[in-house]
Length: 443
Image (cartoon, rainbow, N blue to C red; front, side, top):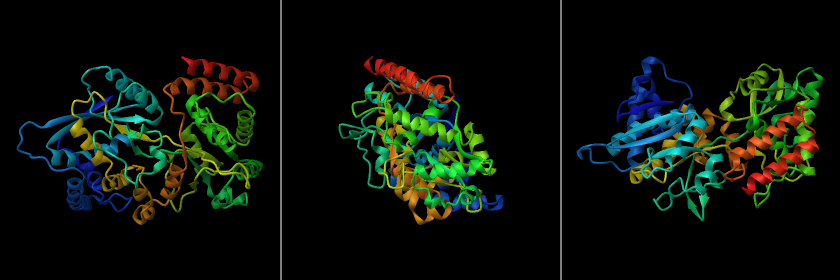
C-alpha cells in the first residue's frame, strides 16, 4: 500500500506534461524533449485550468482551511491517470486530496471493511466491475443521481449497463477495460487471411490450424488461476450461445452448449500453448504465436509493429448469428455511502468524467468510456487501435451482476481449469460445479 498526499500545485516535474494532458491539450503520444517539456507543460496547463474551471466551479481561495478529500484507487496506470488530473481541481476548489494506491484485492477489502463505519475514511473510490452487485446489495455506495450526477450521451452505453439501480446511477465507468483479439500480422497473412476477414471463430480455428501446421502456436490461451482461465474461455462460450447464468442468475454450466464450447476451447488450446499474460504478448510479438485474447493494457499496437488487434469475433460461423463476445472489465468510480464530503466528492467525480479531462488522460494510458475520447480524429490519429477498443466496449458482455461473483468465479474457474488440464472428467466436473454453484446462489 502506498499513500501520497497531493497538494494543489504539488506534482513532481516528471508529471508536468501529464498534468497538462488532463486538461485535454495533449496531442502526441511521444513525450517532448527535455528542452521542450517546460514550455509545453506551461502552455497546456493554461488549457487545463480553463477546462477544469468549466468542469468544476472555482472555490473562494480565501475561505480559510482547505477541505480535504481522501480517495482510494486501483494502483498502476489506473491511479496514475487520476493523480495527474488532481492539482487543477485542488486549485480551483481550494481543497487538498490524499489518495491511496492499492492492489485489487486490498482495495476491495479496505472499502468493504470501511463501509460499516458511520463516517467513512474515503470520499471517492475505484470499484472493480465484478464488485458492483456486492456494493449495491450492501448499500456501500451513494446514489449519484440524487447527488446531481447523470450520464451524457457520449458515455458508451454498454459500460453503464450494470451501474444503475431502479433507473439511478451509482457508479461511473472510468477506465474502459475490455478484451480484444491480438494477432500476429505475418502469421495471419501466411494463413491466407487479412485481419478484417476474421469475423467468426470458424476463421480463428482455420488460422490456428494452419499456423500450427507451420510449427508455431496457432492460438495462445491464458493460465494463471480461476479468473484468468474463465475469462479467457468466456468469448468461446458466448460465441456458442452459452452463458454462465440465466436471466434469473441460475447457473447454466452443466449443459450441452457449455460442454460444446469447452471442447472447442480445448481444441484451440491444443493448437498452441497456455501462458501467463506477459508471455502471451511476447510470443505473438516474436512471431511464435498467431492469435490470443488479451486486454488492451497489455499491448499497444503500432503501424510498424508485428501485431495488432481486432474486436473479438461476434459469430461462431460465417453464417451464424452475431453475439457479444468481448468481456467488459472496466473500473468504475463511486462515492462511498458513508463519505463525509459528498458535495465536493460528486464535484470531483463530475470533473474526472468531463469529456475534455478524460480525453487528456489518453496519453497517460487512460482508456475513457467515451465515444469522443476514443473515436475523435485526434485520438485515432495517435491511437488507431482505439477504434477496436470502442467497438469492443460498445458490444461488451458483462460478468454476472451477482454479489457472490468472487466465489462463483473461484468454483467454476477452478473446475474449468481442472478439466482443461485433464485432471477432471468434463461431465462429472461440470455436474459438480453446477451443484456447488446452485448451493452458493441459494445461500
